[in-house]
Image 1: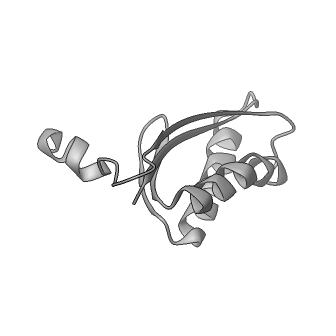
Image 2: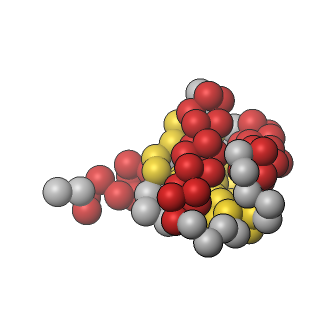
Image 3: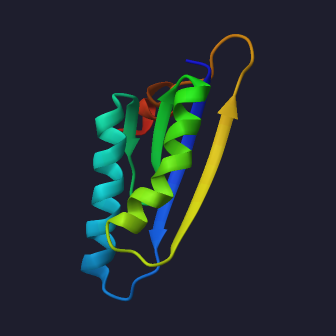
Length: 98
């Protein structure tokens, strides 16, 4: 695992229930890819191969639009190591779980 990506899909809709429904479709898409991921309150973190994660980043905004959002803001953070591996989700967060 040489890459970790944090992605937030923000559908520009006034109805909170519609926002959640669009975000749910985006998360369903992530689930369908088979990558390791963890959903958070504001963003979802994915781990894996750089090229595979960039394909997900490329597609996720269109997935949200197809789910009913006429405008989507997508925020992405990428941690990439050309050699070795990046720290994983659990290495970063397990000590804070209760």
